[in-house]
Length: 208
Image 1: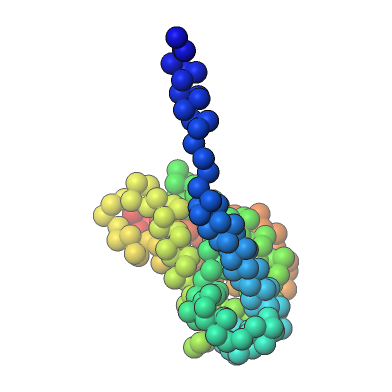
Image 2: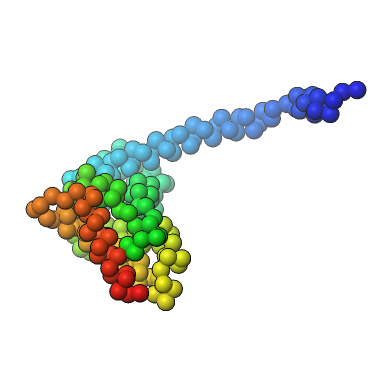
């Protein structure tokens, strides 16, 4: 008599791979790879333009030309220039915000400050220009991320409106960043974090 595990093993060995499933998987892989390559080309072209031009002046046509793709290809991957910027923020910038719910200032932004200081002109071009600048996209993305990362509902007095606290923290973060970029005296990411912690922490303490 065969052992039960042996019988199961032999039964499993009788199964044959589905040729249609294998073919579908093989066909999907190159498509996914092409999508990733195209997006990478568009992303790279976008960043290159941001180093030289204000965000508000860059058009979808500019991005497509720089990337060597048609506008239809751009829109196949992104609905708008704003969505492209948001994808960059979500993928690269926002994940470096470290939650510190036990601290009054809630976030360690040192890595974010380091990223900004490594490419100051990039950040300036995104944020400058008033109407049509990338400031709104950045602010909304940060507010959504801050709410999730910091876990405000557990770490902040529930009597405080969550939206008010979120906006306050993000405004402080951006104010510290812009001050460092405009200052004639260079600041390190660690020094910027200390300034942010003092301002945000004391402010939230007063609100509470």
